[in-house]
Amino acid sequence: MEGYLNGGTNGHSKGGSSRGAGKSALMKFLYVGLGVKRWLLIGSIGVAVCSVGLAVVLKNVLAIRLPDVLPWYSEGMVVGLLGVVLVLAALYGLYWSAGPLLFASKSIEVLTDTLYTRRFRGRGARIAAIGGGTGLSVLLRGLKAYSENISAIVTVADDGGSSGRLRRELGVLPPGDFRNCLVALSDDETLLRELFQYRFSQGQGLEGHSFGNLFIAAMTNITGSFEQALIESSRVLAVRGKIMPATMANLSLSARMRDGSILHGESKIGSSDGAIERIMINPQNPEPHLEALRAIEEAQLIVVGPGSLYTSILPNLLVPEICRAIQHSRAKKVYVCNVATQKGETFGYSVADHVEALQAHTFPAVVDFVIANNRQVELGQQFLGQPVTNDGRSLKHVRVVASDLVDATHPVRHDSTKLAQAIMDVYTGKHIDVVSTRAAAQAAAAKTRELAEAKR
Image 1 (cartoon, rainbow, N blue to C red):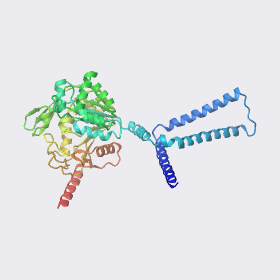
Image 2: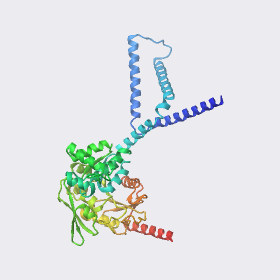
Image 3: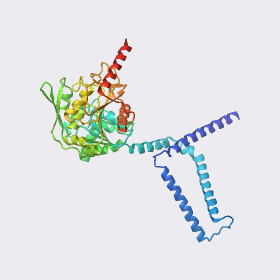
Image 4: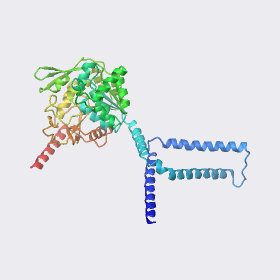
């Protein structure tokens, strides 16, 4: 008997917890902006109108006359109130009978959370993110939590690795950076994402290729265009946002070094030991992708970087129409400075050096803000770069936003969440720590001294 009572008590407890979870899930349907309450209200009005219509039909067809016990308006109120009570009683009984089963399931939790996040992100800012390489995918992974109206404008100058091989052998645009962006903007966090990033480690002709690159190349042949291949790949991965090339031209890079020599090809430029003076694209005046121009023109926020300054970011901005579209845009323009220098491109660069190189290749007011890391980190021997610091030089047309942006697990990269938060703070104007370059340099120097003292 005691066991029976305990079992009954446990069952009641489980039922209570189920109902509690069900109530929580039910309340989520009533969140502001979810678009559910309005339809519940319209449905309730519809039931009321149907009830009135039914009452009129019954009165005229059956010639029903109610006894004049109360004034006619009081009778209407009593009957209406009785109907409301019956409806509420039915809903209450239905909730207690079926609620624990319906609303306590994980699928309902997922549904309500998905509806809310989709509604919130669907109303997010129109963002044009310009860049390439790992930096752009890191940025997109963070920004997708704030908006689904993201247009990623990707460089097409890559000529190394799997992308370079497919570009030379099949004549397609280098798919690697596009693959990374697709995965970054994907809602699918499971096996499909891992599949797209899978790289073959053996096999004649397959070794070094990633599955996603081969998929995009195959889809290009099936659909007849690289743009359509991106659209179909986006559907497969449930991508939230748009991904497009800066140009469809077969773009190649050249760099004039400070010693006067000229290097050709993205992979050679990135692996050189010299200092770059000027980066150039060939052809010099490629046709821009129309969707990229439209994304920039309609954007409320333009984000440039992070990524390789000379081989991932500037090739997009050197497309003349892209540069002009940015110049004429009224959107807030943000440059995300790398947290570490890059061998072959920006070794020894400060924040000011990055911005000045950007301005020298485009125009002085290319960005309004530069977001820079202010957390001092030790990169370790496994990384070839150095932390990018603010040396205090004056920057024209640009305000510096300093914040802790480093990924603790990979200190040469940004933390997606931190970076997206800093960018959206700039966009909304909330809690921005806008500092002069000199003040930022002083703060960084003070932090360095503190770390030195701590080591002693």
